[in-house]
Figure 1 (cartoon, helix red, strand yellow):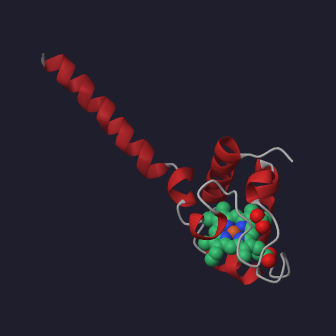
Figure 2 (cartoon, rainbow, N blue to C red):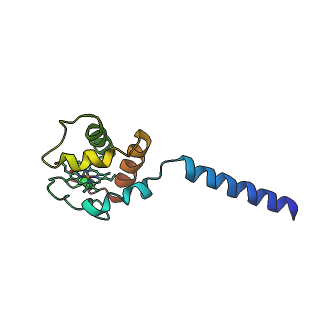
Figure 3 (spheres, rainbow, N blue to C red):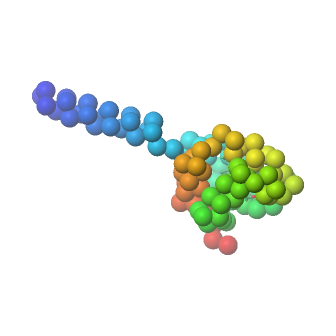
Length: 107
Ligand code: HEC
């Protein structure tokens, strides 16, 4: 079954490439759980909004602003500015889509 092995190998290789190159929302979200809860259902310490009630676009916009605009946010904005330093544009989209798809709570 040489052909079978080659095909299996090709599928495995493709799988590895995908996980390495694409930003993984589930993995990124693990960093947010300590403050936002495991389903983004908590008001973060010192914050006022439950992230799960926001749309994917609202989460993306908020994260981009924490990253680029020092005046954006409330009294605890520094916590989020620190978090955003290590997230790329691609990571922001991935984690926002992950939160919205899995945990959204209708307002
Ligand atoms: C150290 C605790 C902490 C961590 C870790 C953290 N956040 Fe936050 N987050 C906060 C606080 C506090 C606020 C409110 C900040 C303010 O006053 O503007 C906030 C605000 C936000 C907001 C704006 C709306 C809202 O829900 O208040 C979003 C969206 C958000 N965080 C997403 C994330 C995501 C996504 C991650 C993981 C990549 C993350 N946060 C990690 C503490 C944290």
